Image 1 (cartoon, one colour):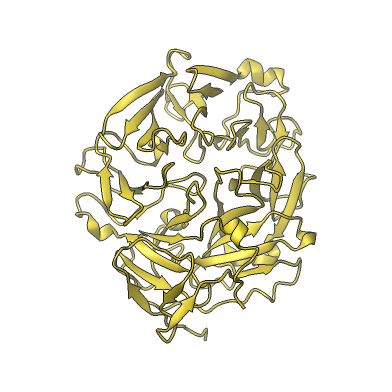
Image 2 (tube, rainbow, N blue to C red):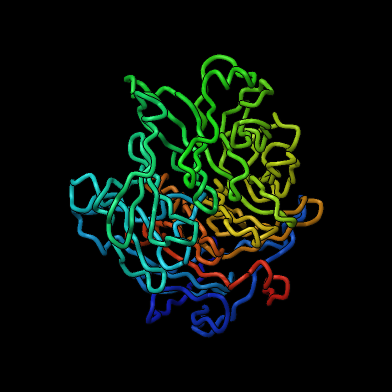
Length: 479
């Protein structure tokens, strides 16, 4: 029988985690736990230096309670519990929307979550909740608009308007001021595309790191089965104009056949130099066979993954923009199947970093984060979700930083902490531990169903050291 380790909770006066150093209370004997980086080099086919830690049997914390972990040497806190809301406003879930973009605003003072209920009840609005990062307290419920994940709310990352968000509504890009609740029209794409049905990036995409450049699919009205594709566009918010349009004519001019395909999502690169359309695999070896990064006028396509798998963004050692993805098949010469790889979106050069086989097939799934600050170089962030009861992977249900190096050069893996997540539970989708990281690379939020707890998905948080990507070079490194 697997050994069970009991961990001790400590309640902090302020629920915000501060795990960047110093003494952390709460080891298995209640003594202090000193912060260190649980980081080890990876070797293809040999991972014995990554121990499989026993599962925690700690009780589910209340909101504001924190847990120090003697294995990972970090502290997690429960930031928000669904119990805060009435049963009329929530069912069983309050969590970050997704991993591929930041839930934290540009100045690091606010973040938002989504709940599976409405405020006021049955209003069709108020699904989104904005919190203060200082103490995780409630700042505002977005009751002025429909604000579930399909609304695609994103913070203004320009640094000039930290309380402003953008969202989509039918064919319009709109803004929402979290300080006042006021909404405004930014651009109506129905003017550019008469009889437009809707615009969307499809939840996973984001604008660039300054919120100037956006990418959207433009679709015709629902025809009883789907929303037919009309075009993919790039939009310059500062100049209020379209920069590029991939419509049927442009698609065929670039070698496409048949109708314009619907990508899984569209996404701007962090620096706004490219737009990625996550097309599915076709094996036609054209610009629409798998995900491609295009210039903003839809020229110069560069293939960045083999298929529409989970993906994210990082910066290379020289500041180059890297598209990070899970390669799922042997249909791409850049990388073998079942690997995690990073591709330079300008040169197309791919670095194969990790092999899924070594991590354990039962690691389950990966979600990747997005870095906004190009000074955060040489690492990518991911979270894993694994079958809680059976997984024996050393990366099961964890938050992880991975060094961007070819696997032959032994990239380092920093295991930040356990997500304490009962995946898949009664409903797997909200239990995938979506874990966005803040623009400064310090705050990680995720949703989890605490094993042995009340069965709801609540939001947890861990805070990382300042400039950890530099500090990790001098340690301290966990023994």
